[in-house]
Length: 76
Image (cartoon, rainbow, N blue to C red; front, side, top):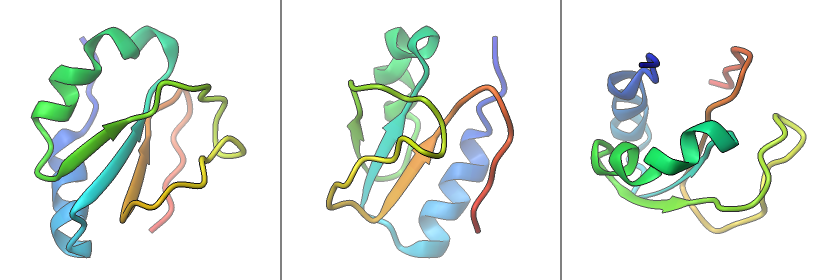
């Protein structure tokens, strides 16, 4: 349905050596959050709170935050 670039996310996880990853999803993708998490090569935490874009980053103890939204925005 959507190209979530899971392979790209897994490459970034490997590159950073990230063990704990938080994923943030817009409301429309939250019902498939477990399926997305199952495809990632890390311990995945699913953010159930709001996801309003780059200004809505939770303060949590993880190695990487992956946020899917409506516009492309990449911090490398």
